[in-house]
Length: 120
Image (tube, rainbow, N blue to C red; front, top):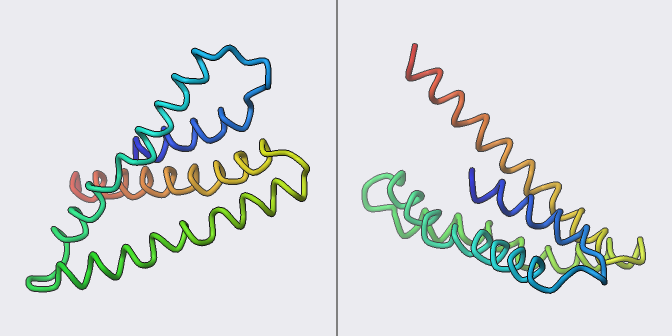
């Protein structure tokens, strides 16, 4: 959830960058963006494997990653299409921030529901 929030914020912030932005803050933003965007790569499959039925970890992780990495196929096309439509890379970044923020909200809602169920 925290990685999703960080990715959404970094994506939106990248979309708001101006050409005259000072170099150092841009580098800090890009480092944070890179850290958030790559941070899930080990956590996600490990959690899928942990939740998989016995003997099904490989099938579960392979199946979930094939769906997850569909974004690698679709993302650049969406980014390019939105950027081209609006004539700005900023629009592409903002468009990608929206589903990332929705994922963060979904994870937060699920965690909150799980805590509420555990407390009951």
